Amino acid sequence: MKVPPPGFFSSYMRAIGLLVAGMIIGAALFLSIYNQRLNMVIVENRKLHAQKDELEGEIADLKKTKNQQTTINRLNVFVVSEEGTPFDTLTESELRKRVNSDLKKVVIGRKISDFAAMPEVYESILKEKPYLGVLDRDYMVLGVRWIVLTQTELKVWVTIKEWKRLPTP
Image (tube, rainbow, N blue to C red):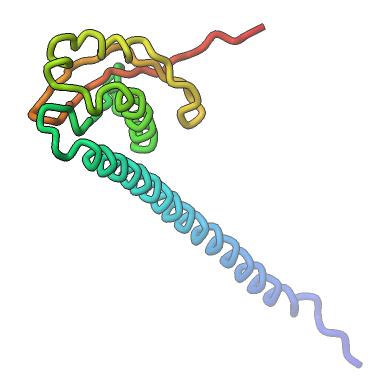
């Protein structure tokens, strides 16, 4: 039996090494694209769930007050960042959802004349209110920028900033 020369396998090993390196690089590229697409789907899914919950709440409120034209039937909340840089979509939707749930308990079903007489009371509900654990961060409402009442719909713009709590010893 004849032993092959030492340089015989080196060209095959080089080709096999290039093939394995190409497979690894290709797998890494595929996984990065897949991860990006998965994140986009998760963000869209959360937005759609928030929108679904909001619409279901609106339907329930409208069914409750469908024949009353002098009451507030809908509530729209708009979140504005204090720093000037907008929040990412997930944070903004979660903050909007929490502010909406705080105001909805008090505002929906109220007479428009009651609201028009004392809008400061509704502003004080939100002023300097902290929202803890919003996607692993804490936020605080600095104040209400605008409150607009059109027919039976109340629109509220709130200014929110990230809140840094002092560490407890």
